[in-house]
Length: 228
Length: 41
Image (cartoon, rainbow over all chains, first blue to last red; front, side, top):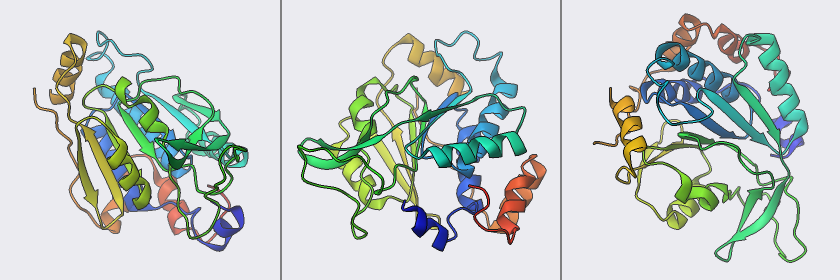
């Protein structure tokens, strides 16, 4: 998002209903690791939700074959926003150590011939929940081979990151998308696996659940945990 | 085994505010109700 545009709007204030739903979905669905695109107040709430899950489920999940348990990985292409979020962690949640911050440039790219954006830095976890709230359509790095940029106000953000690693996600993975209606259409057209979709119109939040059958015994154990 | 998404019950803003206060996240409510805009993300 253009910084000047953000200052004109009230976008820095927490959206209390959005945050409530994010927190509750993480706790009700017993999520173990979250990948967040685009930092903000949501980062703090997700961190708290994972901390809550750790308190409740750390013993129950000891034997699950899953790395980065109760961790939040945050990607953003604006250093200043990452720094503000880090300061907010120090100010409000100084005891939380489960959030890891990744600054990454974001590039104009294509996915199957369609213009989109992609973070340059690779992800370092296989999350069971992805919260997609970034990047904005602005501030992307242009590609000399692609004569296109989303930085026109009437365009919209079009993240393709999840498409690149979709087949590594385990059944049961949840994606929450904050707004980004056009991006949701793009993702739903391009995703190849069996995703169930729900939309909460009142807060403009989209939900996708990877509904494929279990891929094996480790996935079975995760299902047992989630359903216990 | 069933693969399901559990969504929270629909609530209003006042209940969300109470939820954050009750769950050690009063800072969210403070920032939400604060007149100091744009100071923190």
